[in-house]
Length: 76
Image 1 (tube, rainbow, N blue to C red):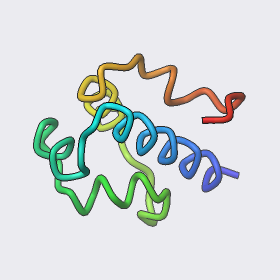
Image 2: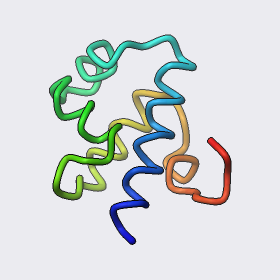
Image 3: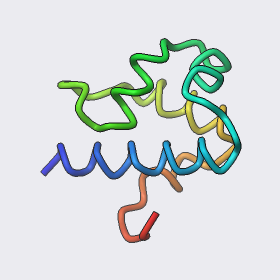
C-alpha cells in the first residue's frame, strides 16, 4: 500500500520537474540532494521512505505546494 503511494508521489515529482524544465541533476543540485537519490524517489523504488524534510525541499525546488505532491486523486 505504501509502496504505491511513494510511486505516485515520485511520478508527480518527475512530472513537475519536467514541466519546469529541470533535469534531475539540476533539481537535485538546487535542493542539495544527490541525483541518484532524486532518481530513486521519482521511481518510487528507493527501498525506503524519504523524510518530510526532503519532500518539502523538493516541493520548494519545484515551486509547488507540498500537498499537490501528496494528493492521490489526480491523474498526474
